[in-house]
Image (cartoon, rainbow, N blue to C red; front, side):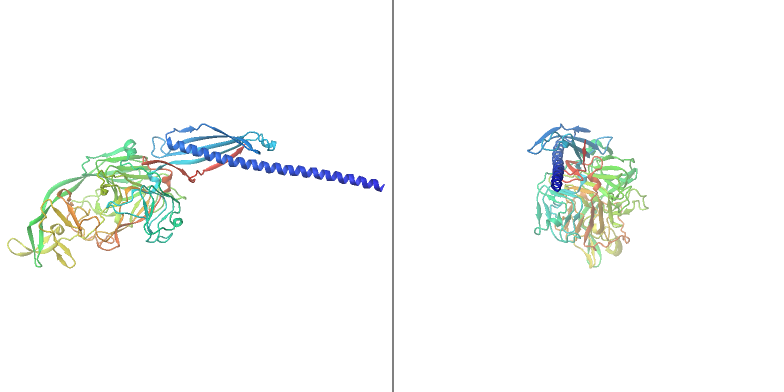
Length: 636
């Protein structure tokens, strides 16, 4: 019995071992099957990602070469078969391009596109578990693509030199957060004080140049300077010399005479603009004889003189209207503009544009960022395009205010008070000199770059025709060549050649055809900051701040002019502007504005109406290799 029981025990044990072996085999097979399934799925995911990116590249290339594909375009599908010793799968790949217009009612200068790419796997994998054979893996990705407008560049320059044809550079006082591009070499220098990396400039977005990076002070730390990367020898960004899209699709706001003697001044309020038309008239011609001072009295030198043609600006009420969600063009006149803008607006002019005050947005408080993530302004966008140059005006007689008893409009300097000027806009200066004179290339700049004190009207001893010395009020002493200095009268007028058409004037004093508000005893030098939320595109780099060292745009420190260029101001009286800051004519380290530039990231998505486009495409919210906004998969 014991033997029998032992045999039965052995059989039972053997059966147990067989069962365990079978279970182990099944378990191992399940592990292998699961592992194989995971491998196949990973392979399919990787293959589909590759195919989707390849399809996106194909769609992007097609879109670059054919931007007008219509509202929706489906690319021909592709079938890709992947075979291997342990893997066999068929992929169907397709894509669709959808055009998204930011102006649904008409042609927009700024197109957006959505590219949708699909990849589906199918077929029998003979070395894979049969559970996979009846499954289809479907994956798709989509990316937002935008046509690059000039507004999307925070700073774009065609020629990296000034209107004096002097070189310019980025240095330690420059730190810019938006996209930078130049069609010229970009010079990098150290110096100044940068809060991010010390003495070097700092760029937080991509910097591109059609030329090369030039290091003026030895090579700097690339990773600390170019935080968003950089590219050299990229394609040129072509700048037209006209606001072509505004001319073609925008409305004509004003049509002037085109003889360079008209000003169209605009004051914009939310939903409405008002205008004044200034016509420059030419009056009498003054003959200004040279005054001489011998230490005791003044005499008049009748042999030396120059002539001054009186100019005056006569203002009349112009048209008013609305420009929300449209663009307008001013022809045949200069444009002066200021105000608060509601909706999408582009103002363009075939002549110079002067910013006579703040350019504000109706739904963004001054000083706030319009692209604030917590409270973005999705309504107001402003573009300003000049086919010559854009300047921040120094001062002017305000035609929107009532006349004073002296017959003149009040003299104001809003851009020199309250910390400078606020500009919420994309600025574009397209001017291109026909004779290659850099002074006529388009720039964003400031008016009155070399202020000098004027000589006030003064009572002086005068030797009259009767031979008597009498106290006499002398006016416009600068123009008569009698210059006052702190050490006394300084008779340095150039004699002997100052006849009617051969005129010079010392650069150390004001004169009526340069200072917009002549005469000023104390013109303002340091005027605050240009607080920009937007972008600047210009033919050359314009001056916004200048040093007090010399007048580099004057020959021999003298102004050369002819009769036709001399402009009288309708007000000759002299007043000490005691309420204005820095109004001593000498204080401050220089003249102009500090840069307080902020990019407006909204311009990556939406441009002002009919704003110039580069024709380039770029990917929103992705990297240069084609990052996707969304990436989804389904199994069916």
